Length: 189
Length: 396
Image (cartoon, rainbow over all chains, first blue to last red; front, top):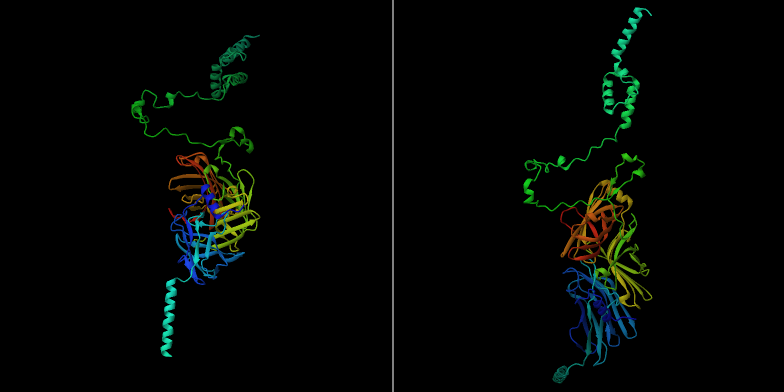
């Protein structure tokens, strides 16, 4: 029986564990992207309610997943300043599902863990989900390090983007510029 | 017979009567009272001719036969020894006087000290019974978990059901934990029940921390079985673990998290016999301090007083409670003595620990299972490190 992260989280809650309101979230600048455009995603951590010292140090491992037919990962994950890897980024695939997994230490109470970028390769109207989960959905991996190690079970908030065509105003502006360009050509000719 | 000879006989008889009157008057076989015998012997002591030898001997025998048991003074009446019970008690500087009825002493009645049991080893020592004085020794209770052996791996763990490493105190048990030197596997022997064995060959990473510890993460999976350690560690030059503490987990994915087991631990290489000998020879006091693992708002501080008869004392301080304990050190083992707990500790409380590492880089792995007035029962495990001998300074 494979347990989904949400199930593990629920079990942790039921067993009286340290299931607090800590969270990890994927954040995109916008919910829509243009076809074939590049966009960045930031992984944010909020450990203000995690057990242990505050300010403290926190770490864990995550797996980011996406559909390889809709998004192309640019192999550019960059850890935020001050953080370190205990598990370097590694990519994997299972059919169309592609993953990026890594483990980090020295995370702050609140702030970015790192950023990565994708190119939107899906057709107009497609919705590309970007999943986020604990890299170990059985035990969990997140730990508060100070003053001693305490496991905690943050909530994971994935994200998604929709590929949309250039808006009508954009087309109008482009066509206007094209007309102006043609007129200038005739005058000079 | 001539007249002169008769006169001579009479003279001799008179002289005999004069000098030997007592003997003649009191033949040897005559009964004498003990008192008479005693007086005769007293006189004989200064005048050996006061009576014949046989009379003296008879008196000696008589008095010997009548001699009482060795003198044992009768118990003195209370009034004879207590100056406060006689007619002059009110005027005695040794007595409270009439005030005792009006103002009892402020202090509570003194409690009798909990003297340890006397151990009579006279038979074992072969000494003569009437020369033998039973020795008073501090009885050391048996530790709840197995003792540790100098120079070998040694550690303690808490055990709960589930994956969260903590649970209700009554559902928390203890065990002895052994961790492989490379961190790739562990085994826990609970107080009761079968051992908990991790999968073998867990993959490990150790990354440095700013406080001198390394950060060990070890995970492994074999079929549905899965294990992990997440621990603060201290390594030697070869990368072998010397000290490790904090989180362990083991379970079966197919059976689900509820059937898994997890907990906290404190483990290390117990101090070698040579290291112990050096500490004892140095007659030193060592201070240790740091947070506990299960509830890391509890800070432990322990002092080891090494020497010929090493002892330890310790305090555990939490925002909501505190207590103290003490005991003896046997080899590397620290075991609490019931009479050395602070007064707020009740029930069958205990502290058990072991000295880890070598002189200059040492720690103490230990467990506490105490019942306190108010907070109730508390269980925890901790690895605390040696700290400089500065009062009030505790370093995690």
